[in-house]
Image 1 (cartoon, rainbow, N blue to C red):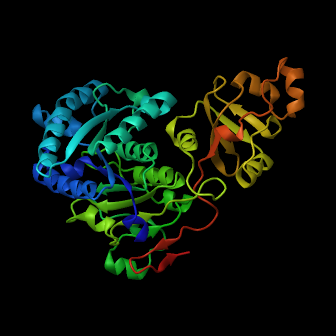
Image 2: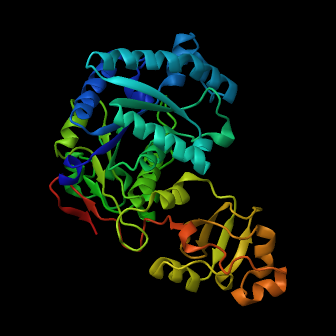
Image 3: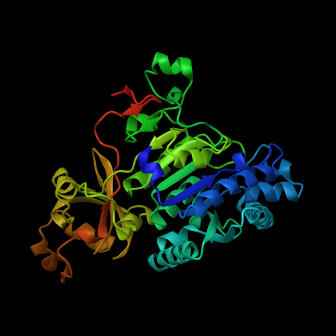
Length: 405
C-alpha cells in the first residue's frame, strides 16, 4: 500500500485488552515488542505518537481491586483513583521498554477541554511538534484522574482520532484484539468471505448501511468496540488522514504495515469540502475538535449551497433552531432528510436566530435592531462533517476485488 509506505507522521493507538494480560496486569513483554516497532519507525525519521489505554485496568490490578468491575461499571471517583495509580505504572513500564531501544518518551495527558479550546488545542499541537523535533516519542492518554463526564473523550479511539487531527498525521493505526472489520457485521455476506473468515481489506466510505450493522459493544476491559472505531475512521478520513484497524498481537504488525503489507482493514483518506485535499487545521478543529452546543436545521437549498458551492449559511436558509447558545459557539448544521452535514461557529446567539430564521440578510437589522453579519455561519468558520454519501459501501477483499457495490 503505497500511501502507508509514504506516511511521515503516524499515530498508533493500543487498547487495554491488547496491552494487558487476562488478569488485568500490564503485559511488559508485549510493551517491549511494541516499543521495538515504534522505535524502529521513529529512527527511520518518521514522527510517531502512541495513544495508550490501560491505566485504569492496571491501577485496579495494582490495588487488588480487579473484582470491583464485576457486575457493574466503575463510577467516576473509582475510575479516577485507579487511573492515578495505574498511569504511573504504565509510563514506568513504557519508559523501561523504550529505553532498551535508545528512544526517549514523554507523557501527554489530555482532556476534551484541551481539544475544544482553540488556544489549548494549538498549545498541545505545538508541544507535540516540539517533541518530534527533539526526537522524543509522545505517549498520550486521557487524563482520567481528573476527567469527569463533561470533559471526557469517552474512549481512546476518539482520543486517537483527535490526536491524529491535532498533529496533522498521515496515518492512524488502531491496534485491537481483532484482525479488522469483519463482513459478519454486514448484510449479504459473500460466500467466499464466509469460507476464508478474512476481514474486509478496504472500506472507502462509511455509509449508514455499514453503521447500522455494528452494535455498540464494549470489549472486556475496554471502552470502545467496533462502533467507536468506525466513528474514529469517520473523523480522520474526512480530515485527510488514512486509518487501519489491525490486530495488535500480530508479529511486527506496525512495521509490516508501513512496509506496504496488506493487514487488517484500511480506510483511505477523503478530500475536503470541495475535493481539494486535506481540510485546513482550523477546519479540522471546527469539524471534530469541539462538541456542538445546538443544532441549526436548514432547507435543501441551503444544504446544496454549502455542500456543492462552499457558501456561507444565510438566515434565509434556516428553518429551525434547537438548543441555547451564544455568538461564537459551535453548532451542528443539519437538513431534515440528510441529517448533520456540517458544523460551524455562529455569528448570532440562539435567541436572535429564532427571530431571523427564514429572513433575507437585509431584514436582520429591522428585526434585531443591528446587523453585525449577513451570515449565520460564515464559510470560513464552517466545515463539513459528512463523509458518507448516497453510494453503497465499497468493500474490497484481500485480493483487491470489490465485495459489494
